[in-house]
Length: 488
Image (cartoon, rainbow, N blue to C red; front, top):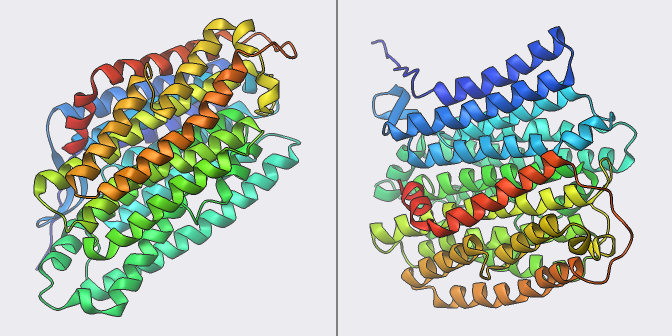
């Protein structure tokens, strides 16, 4: 008996656009050999990918690579949201990279090609319907970043950061694949929905098997590496600080969003809540607490942002763990918790990109993030850039007028209370107060008495900073739109 697999090319259009961008960048770099043309093609491809993803998503849910009811590609509203955000983040990082590329220490063609490849992985990741597609997409997003971190010529710090990132990521991928293999041994399937159905019915007593617990723990641990959750976080500060600033921005936003989407997919659709709940709740508490405490002691700007990014991952994990601990509750509560995690991640990456864009604007073109002392008085010298940086920091702290950050934290706390996890909501609130100390300290440093005179910010970087900040503010005024799309 032959098995026919369906293929819907319309559903695959966003992936075609992203992959086509990577190929086109290579051809333009080879034939035209002009940096401006290569960057322009990469930027237009990223914009086209975002537009295509939004149009296909607006048409409703589409499935492809289906055999019977099992589909490896599910293009939903959430997949479209993830693809649009990843493409826009790529576009933003390209804008931030202008001064770095003009410095001449990074080959433009290879840089744009690797960013387009990473964007392709992010686009595919949101639509993954089985563990193999998910892991391959996550690695397609991550693999180019190994090279991007160490691509700057003559940078020993970049080479060390790239090796650290590579070794840790390979270990994480190995752990995830081992967990996936054990899940296949237990259930005989790798499709997420079929795994969820097998564990939900549990007719064969799968939940009582020690192998099931080991498999689930390995998958969760492997994906926790990708989002730098404690205790799998040690690679992040060193990697961010050693990478070129625009690459660090991409790591902290697109790469982290990819890890969150992958973890959310397996927790929501595949893994048993009774096993993942306690693990995720513990990871959330450890991640937000350790991230905030260590961030208090940082004196280097990028390391502070890296540790704050670790803490933010804890806030994203909190509603997932709380819901599972509460026994799942109602379908509406589950949908609300998952939507809260996605919405928080979207708001976080926009604010984080704005913060990194400000650092890029205020630092030398080919320099690192420097120390907090180097930014002393920066807002007095460059009022608009400094004001946008301060607004991004206030948003990350969850204070008004940073409406996006405030709404994100309120959404997480509301989801925790709906899941009857008041203790975890209290931990989130206490950590949010703890985070105020270093966010406000950095914001105050920007307006302190001036230090050394900094270089004039590049116009394209200032524009990118303005767009990222404006998006964060606008979405703060329309938060329900993000929640509605994330819940689909």
